[in-house]
Image (cartoon, rainbow, N blue to C red; front, side, top):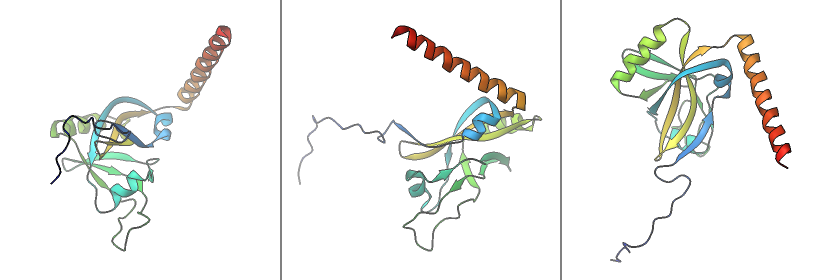
Length: 168
């Protein structure tokens, strides 16, 4: 049996331990909602779902979370069936259980019971080879708020461009 060299340095890769690899972003939620608070939750997956997530075949456009019977569930997230999967492939739009602390569940349930607040899935990423979802306690924006955000973003971009041109 060969011995391991204890002095050799470990290679650090982009998807290695301690690194986050973003798989999907819900840009619609970031546009339509004002995010008040963020929470990280783990996902309970079955079968080939993690393979599809690693391949980046995830759509969070209509994804939201809901507290039901003291548990947190993710609804509306589409994880495409794995291409090389067999007849035992997973259902793409099934509700998935989210893993958070019990105190966080009760806190999120109280926040979402308030009128106008919801739990929107903001992004999905891999952390230490585990799938995680970032949830945001969100309040819907009105049309004029969306327009104002777009105008502010354009003003900021123009200011950055002017500074860049001035430096050159």
